[in-house]
Image 1 (cartoon, rainbow, N blue to C red):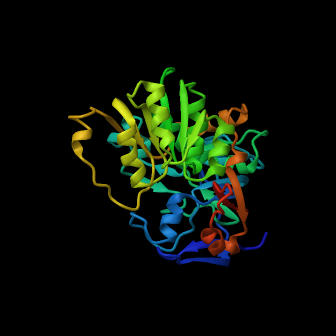
Image 2: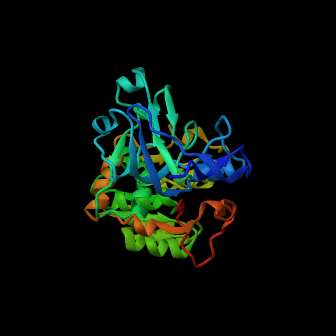
Image 3: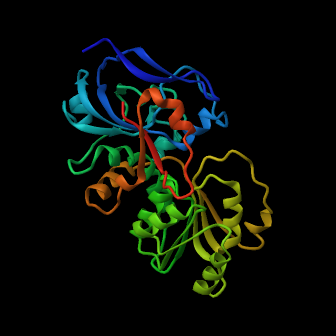
Length: 350
């Protein structure tokens, strides 16, 4: 094995990503797992960093990539027993690596702990030929019948499942999903498994609306389609939808949700937003008594995502649509979706 590898390093926000072919290959320390990366995805958060709209304070440089799947090639002392994996296993690791026993971990909220590293941000991630899963990482084996592309989709899918779980969807609910990106398409598929009375997608592009109908949505509308509100009114006797899952990252979509959701309905906010939103707070209390629920990361849902993929209940391959080499990093970010094209998850194959 050579001593260096190819990788993308982020040297700052605003397009300061560089391809390198001379990065030292890492080695696995005690309880650590080293993998050869098979596929690694680009997330909306990665795009925010690339285009200079990221709300986080990070130290540079680092190797991005928190959506990934890799094959185990080396195990540090005690790693096999700690993580339950062997050389040759295909794996994914949860992006948040937590420590200690603070208030949040004591309550099962490990994704919100104050003592956390993040693979692909504070620790080097998957946009490289090799990467390390730290000793405290939560590692999952990939089932044999789940493709590398679908395994790479596990992270956004697990987020989507968490958002759907936050909504507590009931059998007679009319549910709206806004946005048909990786998390939105995951929400469509996960929400469909809850068998609500009607599941509706809102998305500007027709091609993605058509795909959503194949993946579980009952109806799909453009956000400016007057039939959207007319249909909701007909389905609910004018009340509005029971659940609104916001997955577009657009503040205009959030305000639309406040209009479309019924009194005492639920709005789940699950996106990374560039702009603040100005709303009349009376909508939350005085007028509608809404439940506004945030969604962040994927606590306890990676295993669920892998199980649903293994059982063929969710189509991960349909959501990975474009592949690039590591040295095409700028092309991958600057690629724009055509009017009749489906672009959901863009990935690198290191």
